[in-house]
Length: 88
Image (cartoon, rainbow, N blue to C red; front, side, top):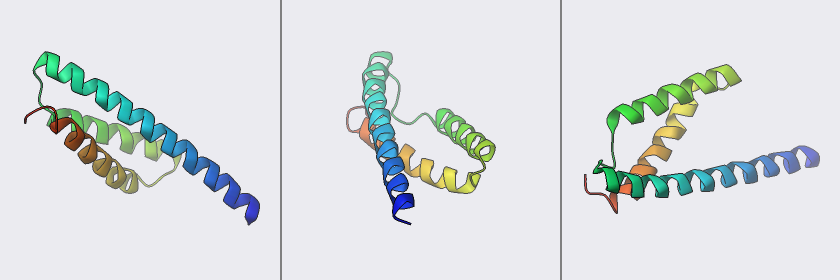
């Protein structure tokens, strides 16, 4: 069990690093959206991301509903981060 926990902890660290990297891309999106006069929330993009995530989850053998739930939270956090700089 101890070895398995070490592996889980290592994967958790990778997930956190990936989320931090994603947040950096969100910060870049803020700059681009400001330049292009785009709103923080672009509903068609939200649904495109969710569809992609569900497909990726399904292909990986992960429950797509779980992936969608997690990503909708992540997307809302990202939009809120953008909206602090970009008016809706």
